[in-house]
Length: 471
Image (cartoon, rainbow, N blue to C red; front, side):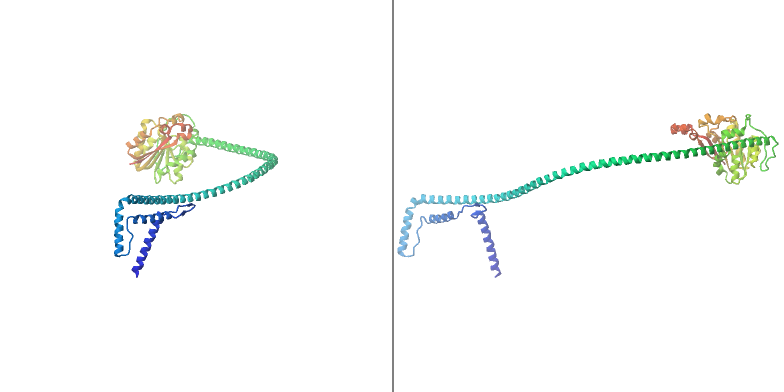
């Protein structure tokens, strides 16, 4: 049963395929708007003609029997006898049928072409309909645009009128505000002038008060100067009196002094070296090198600035100087100072009796040949590990020869730092360091215009300090 159903389905599919092929080969009579020629009458006529052609030369069948068989035999004999006569007719009939068949094929091809053309015509008609629809839409858009343009031009005219009216109103308002601002400016100018006059009067009063204050300050400075001169005079009177005995902590020395010009050295020091407070603040930098020293000596103590710095730290240090006035000044401050020749004094000290030696602005006063002697005597007086600090003008700075060095008539010759370091090395010192002090550019700003390497090489520190340790 299932096999029969499957066979029926297969036959139905074959029939559908045959129908499709027939429809493709023989199109329908109509296709859209273009009617097709109907070939069926021609086909039927061709079929009838083919039936006739097939029966030419054949004998029509008759029932069996002797008579009929005889008749049939006669007919066949006659047909064979006339075959040469009807041969051309038969060929003509067959050629006519072939011609009809060819015409049918051509008609079918024409129908298929017309059908394809009809499909294209339908597609073109659909596109034409779409274009017509778009053209109608464009026509509507143009109509709306024309209407909108007219309305826009009307609104533009209205806006232009309103704009001109607004500009006129703004111009009127601006003129009114300008008048108000001008009036306010005049009032403000008058008020500012009044305030300026008041401020000017106030500033004048302040300047007068400041001037009187400056005059009071100058008066105080003159009073301090007068008191300083009186103090110097008292010190000179005290220096003319017999000096008290030397301090018991350290051995004494002879009264040998360097040659000095007949000038007021205290006044000279105040003017060209600086005030005591200025020098004391500068020398505080060396306090760290004398920490823990039990016995220290200040060679050329001068006005005793470094002795005061050490006293503030709780250390009692002795100083020596060849100038009796300076020694008297130090003693008047309660400092341990003694007038002595430094070479003689150092020579009489016990070996390794000191922990530190400070010598500030002294070696440039000595004959060059005696500087090594000073270093040698200092080395003998210092214990191993003792420090020596020497400060002196820096001859590598050319500015000192034009400004500072030759201001002191007791200066002999500056000592270069490498030479002084060499003397220290020869006498058994080590850990030698050199510190350059007071850059020349600070007191002479014009040097800043020089190239940095040149300024560093020839216009460095005005002074230098050399620190060494006894080995």
